[in-house]
Image (cartoon, rainbow, N blue to C red; front, side):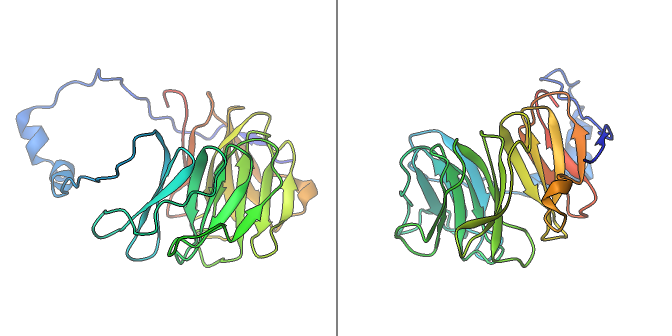
Length: 247
């Protein structure tokens, strides 16, 4: 069992109490000029129900997937218009956490039913694979960022973490009690196909390496003062950003 670490560097939200910047500061900094260089693009989504999560494809043209109600809506990365075969609607309940494979050729997502489904995002149709193991809603599904096209991991409200062989629809590894509460955040390493991080409402972030024995459990654990809503490996692979509560 790895020891818990407190090597966190919190960044506190000011909740609107930030001191207003001078006109010169607002217009003259390199950062402000950088953000002004972007243009606003209106997305005519046509969605009328809440969007639970968004994900861009890592492959050109970088299509956008939006989970809303019991469907996954797909938008063209160039025009931002809905794809002709959108939405994907093989869900019996709310869909969560769309995740594209590294080449953009597959899209996986979880759902309120506990089922993880894998689709071909380039055409309409039923799910190609259905991964059954979780007994409660699955809000975390992630393909590795690197060249691994065969596996994904999922985390659910049942506190179970699963590492899947997509082709056989079988979990290669599962960690019952991976956390002591809902698993609501996850991120694959940006430099390794074998390493990923998870965040939970038990106020912890854990790092996992699938090359280790299941008995070894997680590689490391970090204490977060509040329930963890989001986790992200930074590009270097050596830093993790987390968000939860007001931090």
